[in-house]
Amino acid sequence: MKKPLVGIVMGSKSDLPIMAEAAEMLESFGIPFEITIASAHRTPERAAEYSTTASKRGLQVIIAGAGGAAHLPGVIASMTTLPIIGVPIKSSNSIDGWDSILSILQMPAGIPVATVALNGAQNAAILAAQIIAHCDERVAGKLKEFKKTLKKKVEQNVKELEKIDYKQFLKKS
Image (cartoon, rainbow, N blue to C red):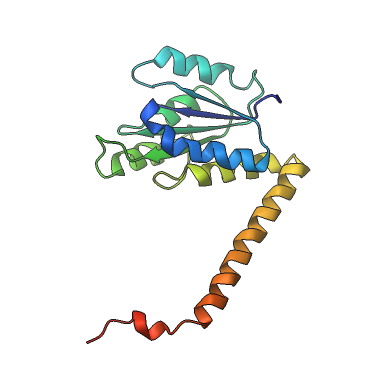
């Protein structure tokens, strides 16, 4: 197996259904990754060890997902020079996800964390792939193909819409 280029880390096992979407997307691009749990609050030593050794292990990007107070992405960013992509997760104790979003988004100066949408692990993986593609032509090619499939889907939807009587969807007074 190839050496991981992306680290996927989450605050707890309950985050796995969302973070698995990042893993699936990275697999589709052929990008090797590692995946683990490190809580900023319950296992701060583990989070520190993960962060401070990531670059030595060959990681180029870290995707960090967390719910609730969501400090994990910022804690990791404070201990490494690698780009960090934060995934706010709507957890069971969440304030409709806003606590997670704002905790990751509102980082202090000097500790940047790129933040994707609530439960946006798929976009986090695409962003990680775009960072890696800057220096990896194989990944760049896979990203170009991925973007072409997005375009084809929209074009197909346009063709389907042209066959539908859209008036049936209008509200009737």
